[in-house]
Image 1 (cartoon, one colour):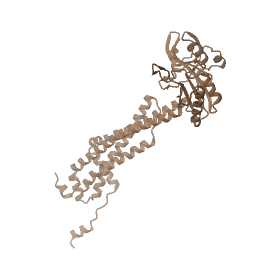
Image 2 (cartoon, rainbow, N blue to C red; image 1 turned 180 degrees about the vertical axis):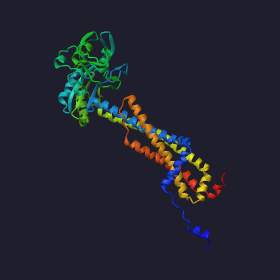
Image 3 (cartoon, rainbow, N blue to C red; image 1 turned 120 degrees about the vertical axis):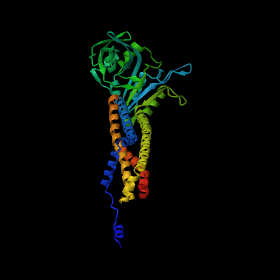
Image 4 (tube, rainbow, N blue to C red; image 1 turned 180 degrees about the horizontal axis):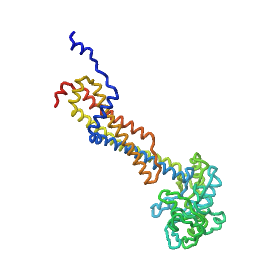
Length: 425
């Protein structure tokens, strides 16, 4: 056996260590910085979009839940039915089918009702000195604060005597306070004019935000008896009409039971037969929270799916660049194979480059996504929430995109014939 044959027989390709593969991959990527950055761009945009959209969706959902919970998730709202003119509905609550006596019956006969509060409201003008503001005037009873889970930032609430005697006293919402007297002004003891009647301001409610289309802070509150006698002056045929009733239940678990009991009681009181529809409606705050959470969740999933398209585009971009890189580096691959590099070593290097491009883009995308989410939360004033699964999902998606995008180019590189590769210009 001659020397050359002995050398060929004894030659064994040396496995390439993973640190060498990573080192070569980094060196290759850094030698083409601009191309590498542009290749990462699709992954960066995709991951950043997923993180930002998920965070904003969670923040908006949390803010809305907090706002609804501040109004009470264990509260039922009862509205009168709709009036019709010429066969055309005037909208929910336009009819006078609820009365103060209905509220009192619910309070006395419904065991799951902890607190019951009736209210009467109308739009009107409020004047303080030279300031004139169109707002909503709300007549409330003694149980309003407990039923609506609200507090005062200034002054005091109505006394039973003031409600019974229809005393002209008023409590302002925080927005109305700012409109009439200026932000953080002390309005207690000040006189205001409501629909040509003089009222003394005795308190200011804490900010509560909007409820549907109504800004709860841009309202003035007066005793229900005063509202009914001096401002509205109209009664239903069966008693003193109200625009709605709040029913705070003994617990969120009692909401369904309370809703059914209230519905049955009001149908009996309103003499409705089985064939007649309800002349009132009941809104369950707990159902609102569930419905909103479902809607926001579906909307977020849809947006994340749209953002995922960027990841697909990014993966295609990585695959294209890696295929081009194989063609450009054909001679390099041939030389490496000629001096002993195995197909496995070539395959692993190109896969490593693809995965590193995607993972680096994922890291950058996560950072940008968190920054965008924080900026949106700060500007729009909702809770900043970044859920762990979105970050872990970002890492996972980056790795998978890089792996899948690099498989075909890496296989093409590993299968190159070294002699043909060396002949390539």
